[in-house]
Image (tube, rainbow, N blue to C red; front, side, top):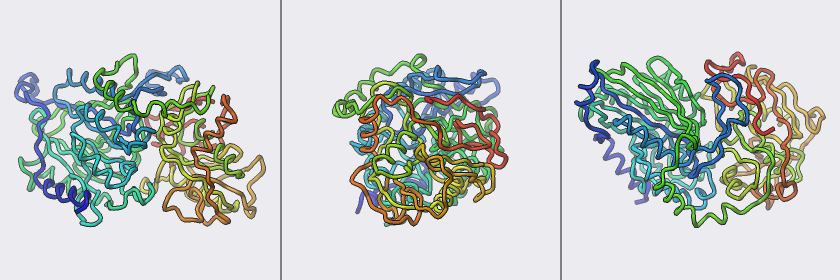
Amino acid sequence: MSSLQRLAVRATLAAPLLFAAPVASAADADAESNPDGARRLSIAYVNDIHAQLEPHPELFWNAAGGGTYTNERVRDAGGLSRIKTAFDRLAESRPHLLRIDGGDTFQGSGPGAWTEGGVMVRPVNALGIHYAIPGNWAVAYGADRLVELSKRLNYPLLSANIYDEATGELAFEPYRVTEVNGVRVGLIGFTDPDVPTRQPPYMSRGLSFRGQDVLQPAIDKLTSGEGVEGGPVDVLVLITHIGLMKSVELAETLRGVDVLLSSDTHERTYEPIVRGETWIVEAGAFGSLMGVLDLSVRDGRIVDRRWELLELRAEDYPEDPAVKAIIEEELAPHRDRMERQIGRTEVWLERYNVMSSPLDRLIADAIREEADAEIGLSNGYRFAPPTAPGPVTEGDLWNWLPTPLPLKLGGATGAQFKAYWESEFENVFSADPDRLFGGWLARPSTNMHVDFNSAAPAGERLIEITVDGEPLEEDRVYQIAAGTRDGQPEDQIHRVKQCRNVRTKDATTHTAVERYFRDRSPVQETGDSPLHCVVRPDVLRSQFLNPQVGALADGEQGPEQDFGR
């Protein structure tokens, strides 16, 4: 029996019992101290840590206090040691506290990749997390490795839609019921069903993923109490790893969800998004932020709730010494490799922009030069905190590109490029959340300029493309290059289909970037944005927008000063 099959059997046997695991006591004392008879509980939420164990520079742009922020808002932040400090500090004022992780925890750094996630186990086990879910990158090191890592955690992974492909049984517990201060809380996990296509298919081999059809029956069971030991839950929490836009749509579709903890898109919801009785929140990424949800429950109903998004900055949250020591021990074997210098930069390198960013312009240009192509393309990845001016290390490189990809070179016509960009716009700006797919917009090299209207109908968003200052010619064949992944069609480069004369180079995305730094250090500029949307600011920090009218959604900030240009 495979490790996947063993876990599936265990989850199937356990699921109907709906584990009762009290997280805090003193319920009667709490009720007595509150004249309104309400019982208090809180949820501390992190998501998308992406194997960022240590503190790092972070960009904060929330303008709730007024004004437009610049580089002065760059702060040292994050790190698991600060997460621990924040958890413990919250527990002092909120004794009835659930600690939840929304996934994408083990992938996203060099040490994460070099140990297939193992470097994260001891540090996250020291945080006191109660529940977590698998993210879309949980399969980065293969399905069997995901199962192995889950067994080493001191908290359960929940997912109602991941199945063992061989047995058809659930691979993880779909939900849990826990009692917090006399309040019965049901928690359901839901992982992106598109994992087998968003990630290289070999990564999730052995697992199958179902869609949202699994959710309403589970919600109905927990909220009705039918067949549930202890009866119905008072609060239903759905933890999703599908992105904010899709989570909002899910909240509009499902009945009975009180709280939806979203992850995947690294969005920072300083204010909750409200759909009916459901609050939807997401807490950024990289351990730089933590969401805190305070609930008051009386007679089985939420009577008050409050949300706050905390910025885990160095001046406010010192590092927990014990967790810091564990991290030092885990990283010690990797320090020399992490700190090997590959170049220098005089500009900030970050990728906090839906359309283009200094880091991705550098990577796309490096790919173009390494492959001797006319156009370079790079993925619209969301992971990697900013890299400060100064030395650039191998650790930085692995943060930017946690999977080195061989470079593929081939020809595509201008007409193919037009179809490609229309497809990319739909992936990112579709009015239908079900059609949103993957990360942010693809990143072209800076010699390609693309004007578009994100609010136009699908298939009609592209306005103009130029290459080296000349209009794109539909019949001309352009030499393009990008990283290739296992399982990709041989004639596909990035997502440009049916390319001709395709060949794979010996170089990778990593060797391309290293050569770029060898030739150009110190990097002093990364060029202007090659992507321009006529109805949005050039620097767009959020994908949670109103695509129909080309305007910012309620609560979204206006134009920001570009970071690192």
